[in-house]
Image (tube, rainbow over all chains, first blue to last red; front, side):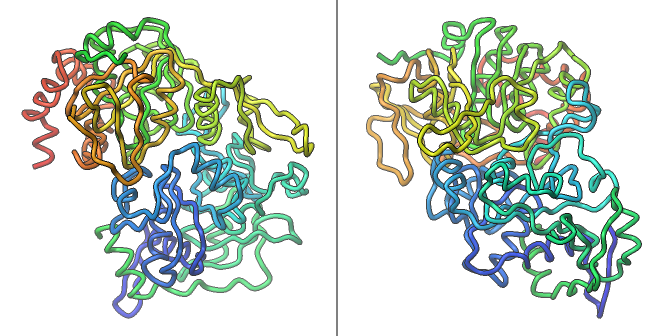
Length: 255
Length: 288
């Protein structure tokens, strides 16, 4: 992880990614949170600029307010701080499927230029090079939340020309597949990485580079992307993390 | 009529080679002790079912108990991969493992469908993903009222459903609270059920978000304190997060895995002996 320092404030590229992801959540947003970076970012938002963000975990915890980042989606700190705890069939049926969630926050092992996600296998399904954990809640989160934000570390093995398995549908091949299938959510809108931010562009019908983090060049992002990356007409620099954001983040991560 | 028995008797009586079984738990209340006892009794050719197979499934697979896994997310949460599971899928070690995978929403629907006594359930799911192409058990049906295309998944009927709960009473009623996952559905989907409880009490105290399973749907109750370790039972224990990290290098090395299982699972007769065996090991030393 690269460190950046400005005016005696130092942060890592992972911290920049978490801060940039947290800023995507406005106050009051109802957010379905995956474990790992999505959980970190959503809790950072809740403890900084978006105190009324509602965090929903697939373990059935609605309105969880953990004071530390839980290592899994079913930690006791989630259930004892939640507004309600429901069974797993209910969380997926009544809450996610029914369209009550604004934002789905997902990680990925591989993602393509349309925001399609693979968390199943690297290589051939029948004879995988790497067997990944699988779908979890992601396919229906990607389908049913109003919008989806994807976070992952940026490199050519992760942002790829073609994913090995479509675990969760983004924008298909960019030609209206979601509409044809009748999916209710609008799909992935942002891919937040440790190098910058890609946003889905309806004109280009794919993700385009919209922001780079401080100290990162457009060429670096291009080189770390496995497809021929489209770059927005004006790429701006992500605002650097504030000391308040870093303090809140580190109080969660214990660093 | 609920039976009360020891864990060894409950497994011997209910779990047979070739059965389709689930040891459910969504981070909370995972019946580790039952998995260990199945390993001790040397069951083979099991079809294991679980939304979130974790360490205890890694152990069952690595010890050669399973021929198939039906699941939706297989990992060591917060710590890494399940290397025994990966070795089985990637290299057929110790034996080939057939897999059938779903999304969480699909698995939850399958449990709820089985609990409801229906042959299949529907959900808005799987559309546009590659998952239907790798299993026969996801198909699409048309809503007869609206014409909407919906995913259909079959009921997940079990031979044996095994869960942990916090308490049972002397009549065999069971109560659990906190994250209750698909615990109720697991019992109601199973022809035979085993519930491991922390404690048998005279009378239940009402709990926020509490779930009660009446005795007449509960097969066997086993009093088994810390039966979910290193998972947890809310208001009885904390999740041993450090055990999940501790497991990663053991799982990674098959020889080390076998030696560990030999010392702590095959080399102990009960869950209390298993827990005691950890006191003198590198796990407790690592904990400080």
